[in-house]
Length: 396
Image (tube, rainbow, N blue to C red; front, side):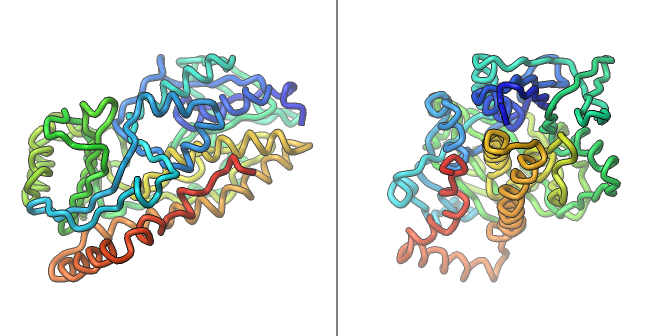
């Protein structure tokens, strides 16, 4: 297709939406992002950009900006919960020295993408809440917003998250029933605290019975990102906006000692959300409308791949548009290139949490096995997920 003739409307100004807007604009398309907020600011805290995501940011010309606002991860360290005793250290510098793993504040990544998109000529329209999509006789989609604005486009990309209005419009026109997510029996707190404990550029994973906590530094290492996950039977609303009393978090992790306890003592206003499993969408496109990121494939946080999968989607979609003669061919190719990989990554995340939640007496021999593997086969442990991290969608 002639990219310069394409008018693309992206719904959602988050990581995936801004990345696909920038990728398509760099190929010559005219791109507009519709964002419901009055300004693009990210709540939330830290995330990990793994080498597969770094490859996309490099292709978009933003790798240096990412490095400037991030901490490069040197290792992943698994520890016992009571005193923080080290069980195993996965040394990324030694066994994945050619790769780059980063800890970054979500707001910094969004700002990097936003500046890149604006500098490239992407139009950003704020305070535009999309309510529905309809299709014209000529095949073009029309986006209707709550402010009575309507926009026709050659392609509409739904990058509007797990509660995607674009995905809902697709389901209605295709005739698919919405698949309801189910509660995994786990909740998670997230918070940022000052780095008063001198945490280095390593991901610290404190493992306990039925729960674990992850900590790593952000920005100039002055801040620490905390994510604490607990198994729980009670249902919690599937939301990113709930606030909880920090004492509830400290009570849930009262058996954690050492540095973990020091970090928990610093928490002031944690967010709390329930972890829900969502099915990967069977069909991502209809006509000239397609889905990207969480709108198509929400994932649990246990492989740190939500943002990275959205970045991969963004690059691949733009590449498929450039390399196809028709919109249908492009969108079919996009789903073919992405869906099987995303399903595999989502399943890996679904299966990963139990490793950190073992209870006595099972945890004792399991930790001994981990220590043995760390001593005799550390490279094997580091490379077990190379199929995720060494995958480079920009390579062809």
